[in-house]
Length: 319
Ligand SMILES: [Zn+2]
Ligand SMILES: [Zn+2]
Image (cartoon, rainbow, N blue to C red; front, top):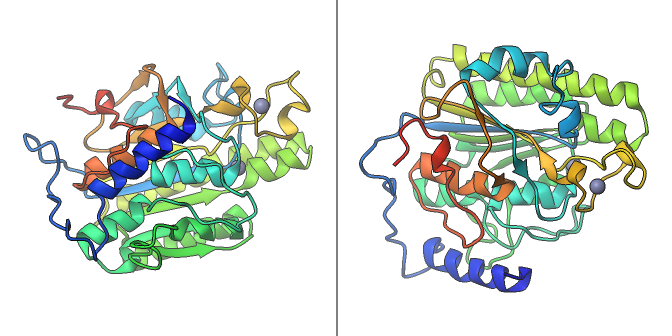
């Protein structure tokens, strides 16, 4: 199916499934579409590490740059071996694929907001919860665009709390932890920029160092979730990337990204939570757009598109 046709179908489906507050169809059942099981997950936290290659992370047989994920988180969850961004392998497009479950070629400079509502807007529309119950914290100012969308019935409505500043990932971690402690958002996306920034700078040593640092920051978030009385035992943590980088021998290798080479498309997915299997290496091919409907399913609302589906095979009790 070509992209245009796919986008059109997605538009129709979202228009049907996700009516805005002014639509007549506001009675979409907010109860989970999987009624025979009540999920234990009450909160979903998504960590997005910007632009490391699979071969320097989970694809490294020794996984020496991600010791926390490989040694301490892996036994607790799922590490996916065949997870891809098959849309535009740029930052904004990659993040929009995560937050909207659709591939959209976005301007990569923060000048364009996504067409479709994100799972954050959809969640706030369904729950009518306080905006601080959906949170986006990022190390790139341009990603403020993730908070809103073009569709007129959604634009400026049900917007999540967004903290988007060009800053070191360590500062982003502090802000994310402080905000989670204060507001306990039910859904959050935390984005770290390090590997991408140092890759573009052709700085191999700091590229590797930042992979290691964001591994530690992810672990810090996981430990926080485990020890927080509201989050513990009822929170799913998803760790992924917006894109990889060119494989060696493709264009300028690890310095850049943006095409359809294996290095750019092959990304990480790690999931841990009370409704998912543990100590599993998953290999049924999946794509970055499958995150959004999976999160929606956990949170009890439907977020259907023709291009993405719930990753049922990863659940503890597969229907
Ligand atoms: Zn990126
Ligand atoms: Zn590439």
